Image (cartoon, rainbow, N blue to C red; front, top):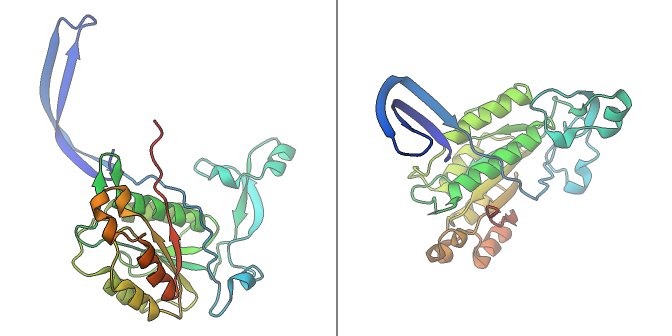
Length: 272
């Protein structure tokens, strides 16, 4: 079912006998009901290596303590904990599932920016680029929040909120469920606007499938921030969109020349 909020007050009930000889159908009015469908997290095979302070190179970031990306203890597993953080040795020793716990006091900060420009959602029978972008964004947010990082979506939130990771993940899902391709403002203009108040230690992650010709110039103006661009190939959803795809080799070169780390992400096809 597609990501979104669904509301209804009319249901259709259908029934038949075992042989299919008798069939009944009736519509009933009910109280207003609502169903929220969150995006499914889609793995991204990339380590962002976010910095924990201005001027810290990726090779040096590992020596920064208190970044929130190193486990400092183990605790008993509770429902909802990611299975990838199970500490198997401790679990075997204590005969109960134990998970790694990460510091919550962190200086690592991610700002995730999604391409929500009007008519940039490329759709086919299996999905759409915007659904995929939201899935990758949720995966990144969950991964870093669970390790103690601060993650915000500055297009939709004025400030980052410092709640416990489990609560924050729920807030992120609520943000992503409402993302639509309905903005007239260009992605590059949005990026410059929302990046203005960000601390220099912030890693900005931009996700897009359709090229914004002004994005490389905008990235050049944000040299004080670490910039990571994840691109989808719009042509994988519609061959006619190939010339304007964010994964077009010429466009990838422009992004890299602007100082961004560029990560083309291949589409994950549904298993048959």
